[in-house]
Image 1 (tube, rainbow, N blue to C red):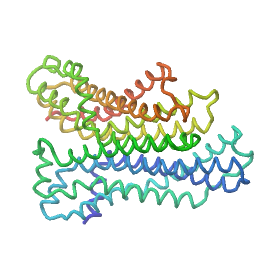
Image 2 (image 1 turned 180 degrees about the horizontal axis):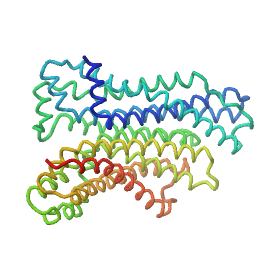
Image 3 (image 1 turned 90 degrees about the vertical axis):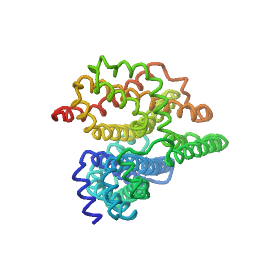
Length: 438
């Protein structure tokens, strides 16, 4: 039963699983290239170059696994939430919690299987670029042969299996634990006020931020030369707290943008009547709906700010630093884009209802632009806050001071995040508007 349901779910929501597929492909690509570089390093005579390549390959693999679990869990959670009605019906007619969990895990596995060969092929190409770039900059002896073979494929397959299953199980946790009556109430939007999930998220945010602060203090007290290596993990620890606090951050951003949102969704702008009221209600509800998009946007901003600050502090940035910056930013941007596209795809019924009660295409566009601006504001603010929380105590030792960044860099990152949010949010809109209202 679970296998059939999983296949039907993937076929019914290809856009949702396309996001999971792209993240899994990126994960397999990086792991394949990293393991290939580790194998290549084993053929180098012992020395500084061998240690540098090995450390970089291992570091990329660890961070990639962490990001994969984090991102896949988030995207899968959105996919599971989008079919709350189906899960509620399944629970009501007797489906057991383990069956719901196994269905979601099977969906993730069905998506991971085709991602492996694609990621391996791309990883092979990335490993060549990686090897050639390091050799060109004197970080590898000339003429070192690239060793790929079967081990990178096995490693990538293992990482995809583990990350897809962990991400799927984390995403299915709430849907599987809900009682049938509660599940039906959730699907119908019947629950209001403070929920157990809200309390758990609040406690999780506090614990995660306290843990991140402790990790920051321990890193600051450790050897100065190791601070730069630990900086990405410290950043990720703070971003876990941001993930838990996403709804609260989104509500704060919605409050900051209340005036422009009211202007964009004013009754005169929408032609008055039910369309205006419904559009404004959607804007007020954006804090909860858009909270899942804030963390990946914050991830983009935090990693980019810290890495650019580190590069700004050195006269000649190394090729490895530039490579790592591009790779981490690409992973985070992929996560953010997938989340925003999925959220926008699931707005089909809402857009149809807005059109049915009189809203025009331009008014729907304005509403989505306002939501993209909310995500940009919240994500940029959270990411900048995390970057400050990490660089203030650790920046001097790691050579990464945000004060060294020119204002043009800050403006460029903000504009890039806004462009990403707008492109991902508005991508499904033409398809929504082509459907007849009603």
